[in-house]
Every structure is written in C-alpha cells, then in structure tokens.
Image 1 (cartoon, helix red, strand yellow):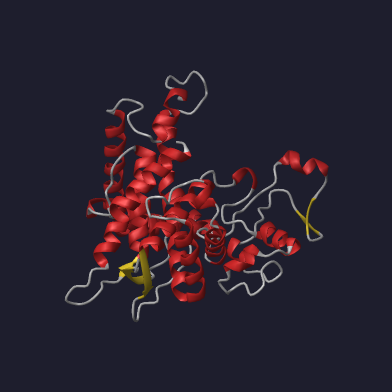
Image 2 (tube, rainbow, N blue to C red):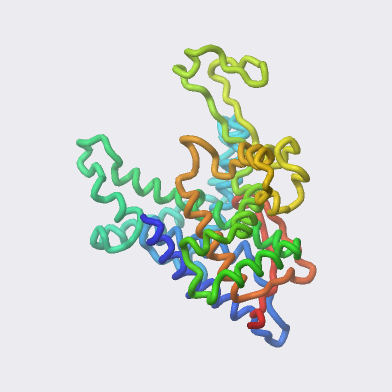
Length: 363
C-alpha cells in the first residue's frame, strides 16, 4: 500500500461522506444546527478507511449502522488490553473470561462472522483487484509453507490489527485536535488562516509539498499527540541477553536485574516539566521555537508512535490522514463547541466528543 493509494482512499471517504455529513448537520432545521459527536464520526471514518486498506471491504460505517458494533468492541478490547499490560496478574487470574461469561460470547461470534465475510469476499476477487494489504503482499506469501515467510493466516491477523493500531489511535488524535481547537480559539484562528491562505480551493488540498508547508498544522497535530497521546500507557521493554554482555543495565545509577521489564508511561513523559514547559497547556507554538536546545529536548521525549525498531510503521499515514481531514474541514467550515457539551479526550477507545456545531464559512 503506497502513500498515493492511501491518499486516494482517504480523500474518497472524507470528500464523499465525512464532509457532506458535516454539511448536512450545518443546515439549520426546526431545532437549529445539530451538534456532531466528533468521536463517533471520526471512529466511523477511521474504520471505513481501515476496512478498505486491510481487507478491500466497504464497511460503510459512516452511513450504515450494520457493522458499528465493532467500534464498541474495540473500546472494550483497548481497555482490557491496557489493563492487562499494567496488571498482568489480572489475566493470570482469568478475570478476562468474565467478558465471555457476561454476554461477550455473542459479540465475539458476531465479530468473527464479520471477519470471515471480509476475508472470503477478498479471496473471491482477483489478487490485485483492490489497493489493500493483500494486494501488496500476496505475491510474497508463503502459500505452501516451504519458504518460512508470511503465511496467509498471519496476514489476516496483521490486517485485523489495523483496526486498533491504525484506525482507533488515529481517530483519537483527530478527536483530540478538534477538542483543543474548539477550546483554544486563538490557535483555531491561526490554523484556519494558514489553511485558507495556503489553498485556493478544497479540491487542491491533497498530499504533497503544499500541505507539508503548513507548519502550524503539523505543530497542532504534534501538540494534540503530546497532550492526549492515543497510546498513553507504559510500553514495557526487557533487554535481550546479548545486550547484557557489555555490563549491567543501569537506569539513573540503579542496576536493573536481568529479566526485569522497564518502561516509562508515555503520558507521564509527555507531561514532564523537564521536557515541556506548561505541559498541561495546549500550545502548538512550542514546536515552532527557534531555540534548538529546547526543541531537541522536547523531541527526545516525544514518542506518541513509540521509538526505534518498535516504532509505528503507519506514522506517515497517520500524520497525512489527520492533516487532510483537518485542512479540508477548516477550509469549508467553521465550528464551535455545542452548548453544555464539553466532551472528554484520552487514550484510544476512551474518549467521547467533543460535540461541535458546524456551519459553512463565509467565502
């Protein structure tokens, strides 16, 4: 899956469904303009895109409620997985089985049936019929088990992982960005001005150098990722045995015994005053500072996509997706917070809102 293919799919779902939905909500009815829950809308958008990228399958969650049960399941799964990562003993005690006992079995079977339908549908097509993960790797699959390469069953497992890793986390970042823009009007005005002065039309907003030149847009995305990281827990790590050959593992002068897992909470890191001044304030301008020392210090602690060999492979697509959605939205609309609905932001699967009111901007 190339970046151009991703851009085509993204623009298709944003331009043909996402923006028209906002346009319909911006038409005043008997009760006035209708508030939009950004969490619901972006999660459906993300799932539609991932369904196409991973399986070449049209889930149509933005327009059809049939498969929306998946979103609730992802939220529960994210909560459960994060809990087990921090408290492994809970899983050892078998507490996760309570989910199945308390009515989770029917939902799991429904989810399994959906996956089987998507996989069967894709395999019934010519191998390059869709611009998806299968098309990208099918010619390199180890179909008969003789090459010790990626097997078809493993491919579908990876495709399934797209939903929480590529869809849910990206939409969390977009929801956070909408949330903070609605609360920080000076930032909103500055970003809207940059986008509307850079592009002559909404159609001209696409991947490329012109979008990349919007430095304040990138700063706003980075600040949303910092202050409300989609993955906010601790990413544990244990040194390999060969890494210990050079001596004991030291952290701040303390010897860490072999076999001990260590890690730092991304949320704690992103809100540490040693790296970020006023860490609980949404201030995109911090990323545009001319102070190289301060910028290097912040960059060293900024890890919403993890770091090193375990860093997120979809980082470029996540930035591009957030950039296109926000740029196209702000080019066509203005938005404000719905009265009495503040919303909440947090890690993937654990946020609601913001509830915003959209209206076409004066051209």
